[in-house]
Image (cartoon, rainbow, N blue to C red; front, side, top):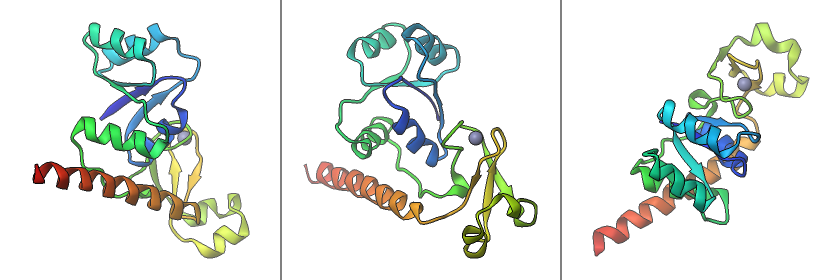
Length: 166
Ligand SMILES: [Zn+2]
């Protein structure tokens, strides 16, 4: 699934990339550029701007209007709109949060010089962005990310359970 996110949604774009979603985010894109990107590349527009959302729909693009307060709830809203059950999250299935590039396994031998010693001691599995070269590993921040992923999954399954009861 491919997306293009408006200038207000940089942190949503980065979080969606953690799920392996292909998200174009360029804060300097104007509305016309966002729209043409959505249409020509078949990307789903993510926006918190009512007018842009309406314009996208008029042009036949797919668009999701995000009005929630937090990123977690915005992600719930995206998965709900798509009818998609989010997969687990981890660097193995993630895209680069910085540039949207694809990640590949990186050999520790080749990269260990670029790593802080504490990281090198504690971790053995690394991934590298094929586009910007940034390195990823399952460090302590992944705990926060997996809590977010759990929140999203729980919220979606609660909603499904409620719907089944009706
Ligand atoms: Zn990158």
